[in-house]
Image (tube, rainbow, N blue to C red; front, side, top):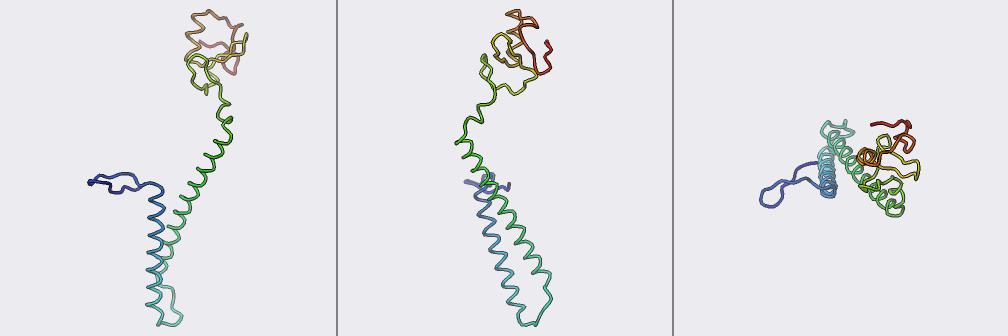
Length: 149
């Protein structure tokens, strides 16, 4: 991200919308430069394409590509956001520790109580096991099935 000047001489990050708009303006400026260069060379019959014109055309293509990538990234983000709003159950598939209410992402560290099937995160399982006095018959620790301390 480029830095832009904010109020009172402060700098801030350029937003994606600002960058898209800036790139559109730069593309238009470069295309106008190319057109002026072509008009100035029109007196010559079948001229070889001059290096400055090639550079301008290359710059236009690079800026257009960058702008299109930003627009596509923005569009894809909106699609994902809409999908998650329409399908909130996707985010609910992760088990939640009944003690601390945090999502349980590390299945290896979690403990599953065989009596009821409840899963407790690794941070809560160690003190709980010590206070209740569970044995290896009472719980399954992680995918390996081994009780780990």
